[in-house]
Length: 284
Image (spheres, one colour):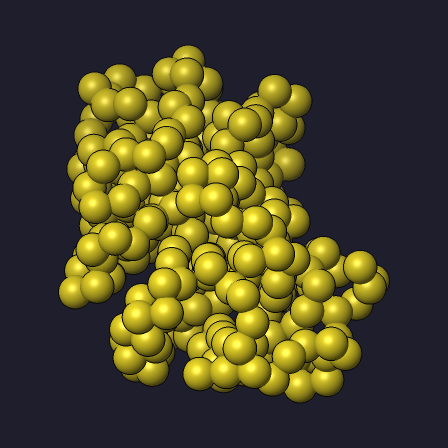
């Protein structure tokens, strides 16, 4: 694998016509969505053509399953949603896999967030359950960010005592999460997966939980090989699934580590990079 992927328009060996792709998996924010968080209009006719060809299209996101299902409501039949950074995988309303987090760990993360807030860090915790997401912060600035990713959310007095199966704890930091909140979670990183999933987001999950783990399970279930899999991502929580596909693409706007790990480079999320790449490789 090259240290730096070649740009899409100059990739040696990248076919201009059809190839045997059976599964396409894409991150949402910073990847499929533009910076205004809009789904490109060209996706809808493309999905119809992919379905006709027998190619499964699967969104893989840190977003909640309910949020993804709403975004793709008109085309959701048969689609596999890799939600909550791979901790919850659903098809046609049926759970395919999940990786639940011990309640004591979720409570420990929530207490760490409370301590950070007391120290002046502008951060809030989202305890992500299968049914809903739970928050303690009630200010509009924080809730506005929560609504973008968790349409099913509830304000509770104590996020350490929710009656739901917890799959992830997400932390939103109004500053730079990689520099402030993430280092404060070092004690959890020793036993769990702590991943910076965006400029302002950090997720705490089981070590076994990852978009890549979820993708490999889906490949096994479908009988699809890495050579038949195309993946798009832009941030650190996408690294695992990039490693699970031979057709791995970092967006031009991606984190430097993502660019290093991917095999190819796609145009940016603001240039319809996912759609342009799929059209090029599959000859649509």
